[in-house]
Figure 1 (cartoon, one colour):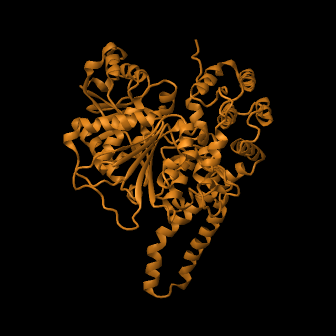
Figure 2 (tube, rainbow, N blue to C red):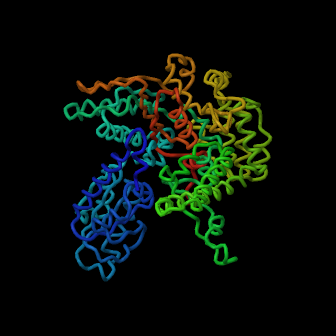
Figure 3 (cartoon, rainbow, N blue to C red):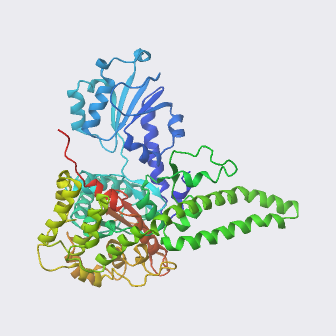
Length: 603
């Protein structure tokens, strides 16, 4: 199940196993049969750590979703609540277990209640349970530290959906503390990281907390040869442009169109029905979305996910030829030995064929969208902004889109992009856009526009100087004629635009940030370098030609296109560095803007 986590440069299965061990230990604390009541948001992240079979082995008989009212009937000895430390969830738990609600008849046998906070225990939450008069009902109150979750062989995420909002809008640094803790856990398993680089205010905070925690645990250092050579901490707000742009890799487009949550995408079922029932015309088409797991455990997906979408057709047809040639081999199998060998390869070949059918269907669904006029027009405007065309005027495409009442998020992405590429908009233009948006979509969006301004995504121009063209030219953020089929530069992931965050990573590896001091000063927040002392005898001696391993941590979210660009750098012949990617959350422009939207509560 988790073999794909150990195939990369760093065996991330060690991290998954550590998390599973802790979960088993907690479950064993609660002797007897168990029912788990889940905070719904946690089921996805937990699915990446442990399947139901592991829970079953430890006497978990029932699972429910946390919701108001009575608990469903379950004849078990223990009820365990798995929840995030949120006050509103405490009120629901209190309602669930309060005697006033009257327990269902089967529940009169004595039951033990337990609560497991993920990722940290909270005094405020315990206080709320106390006020509700139910704190004494819990036998165990514990925390389960699930910080970094292995997503793939080179990808870790904290799945903290509010991290960007908390840091930049609410000045709440809790997620930064969790990040520092997660990095300490990582160092306990993979050795101390000798060099830390960073850019941005949040990066500085995380590095300071890590260094302080290291001093506090000075006596208990693990004697492990370091796996990582360096850590690069990057604030999302040093590169606000990249997530706003439409991702153009295969995986990025699946995320843009359908959304990928905890490694799964939900797709329209009609495309996948035909494969099973060709003979039965019009018979009960499935109505449930098809849920597909997307990670490198699937050979074909690992091969195509990071390609530009325009290269997917050729890749799939090449694969189809290879698979059909492999099936044709059966005609050449004459001897018993040859037939036996063919039969032994059959399951793998059938899996490859079904995988090909699935991805051909997904590619067709996405192609319907990418070949539409609306998609092309939107992309054209994005690319004009990125290249600095007319960023200081009201854009007619945005005006028309508002007039046609296109989805608000599409409008906000474009207006924010224009603002970022112009280092803010002239007050007159900004006021015009705001007025149009509020009159068309409703005045309740005033709060959202205010949030976008606070985070620097949509702001008035304060100085007449726009630094973006200088940054674009110095870092070569726009590459004409990007090669989409056989890329030679990271700009292929956005068909011409090289993500700023990844260019900074690339320059750091070679020739180093000293060469771009001027540009770094134009970006928000400090840039820094720290060294961590290694215990004697643990200095890594690098072999001739051996690559360095760098962990790049995005504070506030990262897109699949950026992940693809880092994988591209890892695979470059003369790159000299392999990258492991970590983030607070995998995001796209839509989910990112959504996290900053506010609706006034109904009175």
